[in-house]
Every structure is written in C-alpha cells, then in structure tokens.
Length: 191
Length: 141
Image (cartoon, rainbow over all chains, first blue to last red; front, side, top):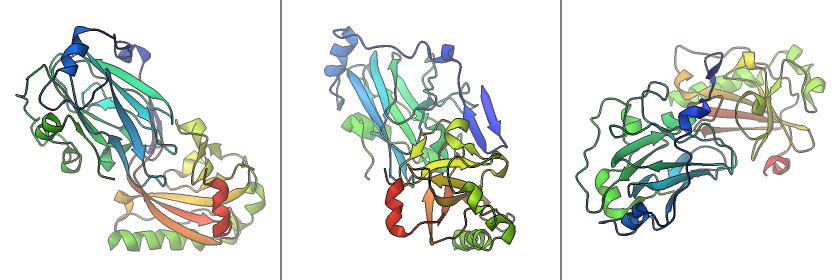
C-alpha cells in the first residue's frame, strides 16, 4: 500500500504476506551455522545472527547501516535494529517488488522489506541463496544509506558486482566493495 | 554557494512574516495546535517525540516546507521548522509567504537533514526558536 501526501509525504507499507517468509528465527546447531563459523576468508560476524545497526547523528544530518558490509553463510540470519532515536529506517532489498528498484539480489532470492522500524524495533531475514544482496533505507536512499550482504559458502569468493548505471552514482558509491567484505567480513562506516 | 543563498532566501521569507500570521501565536502556543495541524507521528511512522526537535505538528497542505510546529514535553511551543529539499534550492524554485504562526523568534538554526519519513530526501531544517538557547534543552531528550 502506498500512501501519498501531496507527492512528498510518502508512507509505504507492505502487505504482511510479502515478508512472511523472511521473519524467521535462526536455528541453533544447524549445518548452516557450522558453515558460517568455519567460513573463509574473512567472516567477521561471529554469532549465529549478524547484527546490523541502523544509526544516525542526533541531528539527522547523517545516517548509515553499521556495519554496511557483511559476510555471512547460507542459512544465516541478519537482524537490523534501529538505534537511531530520532528517525525511522527500513532495510529494503533492491528489487522491482520494492517500489520498482533495480534487482540487486541473487537469482531466486526473495526480496525483503522491513517496512519502517521505529527506534528499538528490529527486523530479521534469513538468507539461503549465495550471492550479493544490496539493500537500502527507503527514506534515506538518496542520502546514501545503503548496505551490502554477501552470502558465501565456505571458500566461495567468486562474486561479481552488479553493473553500474542502474542507480545514481551517489548511491552506488555507498556500497562497500565485494573485495573488502570478503577480506574483512564486516565493513563499518567511519563516523 | 547556491544552497547557501537559497537557504538565506528561504529564511528571509520565513522571518519576514505578515502580521496576520503573527496574530495566530496564541492559538498554537500549546500542543496540540488547532486544525488543520496534525501530529506528524500520526501521519507517518516516526516517534511521537523527536530528540532535539520535540513533538511535531504540521498542516499536510503545506508539505514539504511546513511550517512544522515543535513542542516540548510540557506542550509548550519551542520552535517553528521549515524543511526545504536540497533539490528545490535552485533558480527555478522558491517558497513564498510561508506562515510563521509561532510568534517571537529568539534565534535561528539551519542544518542539513538526511531525510526521514515524510520528507524522504536530503533537506535543510530551518529552525526558528521561540525560546532562548538554554531552553533548547527542553527537547534534547
């Protein structure tokens, strides 16, 4: 459902069914967890759930995902939590299903969209299909609040970036490089 | 520099308000202000109280510029805020006769905002404070 207030005031909400497959709990002791913990070369997210904070300066002048680059194993869960006390954020996959954005998730992967999260609220998604998942925050995409998750099997490093030109350069430049994510496992904003 | 001059232009319009608007100061001094103002957190998904700003109300017909009226925890009007999209700060766009119903202005802050539900693009906050600088603390948390 899209609610539009005079063109500028836009509140987008998604039917619950769209995300029903995405709000799942991680299963301790799964093979995926074992794979995650042994993943090479740079897996930095040590726990079963990869935590990503939605953050911002108190005056709202800058907002970001922290970390904004994450390496996980297939079947691992990512949890976004809004730690920004003065703003709402979303974690929204680049996909046509999400307001006609270009697809920047692996073939066969289901697009996710947290909808707006108030301070303290969280959203989880479990990613099964290896590949590069790019996502954004709906109200802050134009301010460069974007992130990238790489889902990799143990030893898997052959990932290709998406062709440029489908997004504004300002947005594309906000993604961490695949090489950085693979090398470091977790890439954080320097704030 | 274009952004700077556009901001100053918008501010000039904001502070040089017609006497008619000033006459409304009493009506909006305490929250909630009368219709057509509506609580922003009821229009979009934002916290009721925004640290650093307060509890916001706006007439949706005036979006995106506003004025937005900001109140402290006691319901006292502390500031009037205009939100001007950066993309609208150019030679082909202007904001004329923005209302300023909040009364006397003590001082003004202008700062960049990356966006939020309601104004989902980078914009400037032009804040007309109706309280002294020391009293900004009333909306700090």
